[in-house]
Length: 486
Image 1 (cartoon, rainbow, N blue to C red):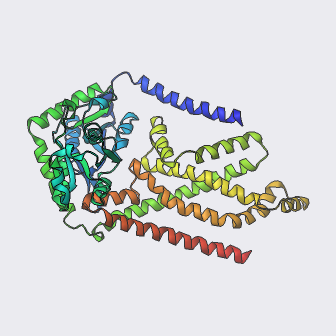
Image 2 (cartoon, rainbow, N blue to C red):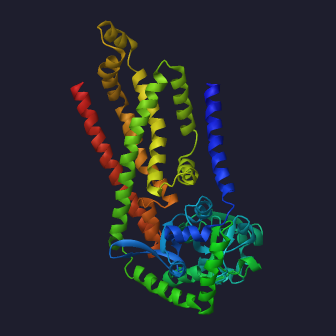
């Protein structure tokens, strides 16, 4: 057993070694030529930050719009390539850049000195300033800006400049970091936090569309590296950065960001023209579709792998037994979120895997470890006397397992398997962190588009209940049928 675990550990270290060697080998800068050769430039963004980037529904299809998208389009046009947009949480963007999932990050990001240690930045293309959002009833308490937030609870996006500003410049503050601005606004309106740190255009957009909120100048002491937003690139992409800087300089010289913000404002007005949940039913329908797809395929992967590893663990081959034990314990001992990130970003450094496929693989593998133990428990519950009786009648070991043990075991494990499948519907929601458009992701999209916090959550809750209750009824039907036949 110890040898097997040691072998697994060495294999994992070997994978990381290969990844490290790949990074080291990228010493030669062909970043610009690589973009031109493939004909696309992939922009990573977190579309919950209007007017920088947000989602709109045009002709029944979701797409990202905003000032950053306009900047990205201009860059792609000048480079003579096609712009491709990948959506993910803000705190995953630099990881995606490091693992070459995206070619550039355009997401209202400030080129701080800390980030510049691992990321190359373009010239600054927009200077907005830093504001705080507060509830209108509390506005008079915070007119002095961030100094009035001492001993208060302040929300900020995880991994953002605003998070660091609150930590460093507000005395005795408790900073609550969340990945989505929509969640921060919800926390503010429910008084979980007293204020939210965001960039000035974002604060003004929320204040303009929500009469319960007010934007106030944060009056933070901003260093020279915190004065605006820039585009992030993989470290060492000098040729690509130089080419993009020409576009940024042109945007600044012609003051094009004003036009970009004007265009973004039109889309934002369209989003808020009708904020009823019925108007956004296609968003939820798409989310339900992806949730069911991910769950269905993951169930198949879980059953196939789970059955295989259960039989390996129950077998008499010590090597296969040890491999099965190591697999089950390792998968059950690591969080699903980490597994998803490893499959998408880690393995993705060697083989490019789409976000949806990565999510399905990770959820399926995670489920297989639990299914393996459920199946093993079901097989163990069959009295050994039945196996001995079947073998004495001349059945082989395989025939005994297939015709005597498994049919009875299935009846025993069916309720536990049902619980696992129902849990899978809910647990699959975590794939939204890598930009898979499941129901939770679509819920965030609707929150961002409508500036409404609770209503989309209520709709998603009802939809999850309908899915799990329906599955529960189907499983109960077959459970009753098996009992009747038994």
